[in-house]
Image (cartoon, rainbow, N blue to C red; front, side, top):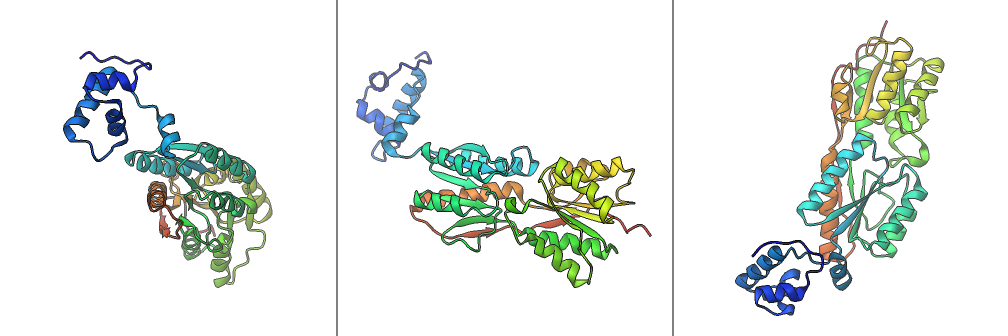
Length: 340
């Protein structure tokens, strides 16, 4: 039988070609267990030959299952979120689900609007990299009984949530201890705006490392936009005001802004300024000098989140399961002893 593609091909056409009833074709399409393998194979062969594609929207209306998941990240241009998205998309595809992607751009109101849009699309579950402390978003998802998983956000205050966490406080503390071990005493920390922080207590790890050595962090803890330009501007202010010998940035993209400002000022990394980034994105290896960075299991965050949300969908009830992936410091060439 010659294969053809025609949107007007109907269930009746498939049934006639396969020599079965329309109801049998419907049962094969939905995977009814009562169908014999021989009948199923004959129907699938007819569907392929005629170019018949089941109407996904119509089936979703009947079954209330869309086989789609929503993923909201904070900045799709950031390589960290790109890798998380890849992990989620691959895991979803392997399970037969499509992924609908939204970018909140670090805006809580935009995040909430994206969630409402996903709910209107009747996605089967949501993966959320939330802006700040997402109480409102969580309340809405729970009120709608929507399966969801939080990623990379502090969850201690929330009941009945599933989450994939990365323990960034441990990563910041390890980075600080490494720099202190090299002899640095004036270490700055570039962190995103307070309202956009998924882990509000991350600054405590910085302060704890400095306090343990009786080091002052006055003027060295700096909040800025979570972007390359924001970090570049913050670094200019730091160099003018506090003259740090080392800077820890909360993303590799922010670290790139530090590199930019250092070049503008004629500073050589790491001779004049040591730098540590966060996330260990591919760019870290290709910067000159190669960037020391706190590695997070980016791909695994997305993949594990899909696993958790699919478990909720299958179980049909809310739960609380927390998966924590530990960070590790990847030492490269961007840190050295402080200049004497």
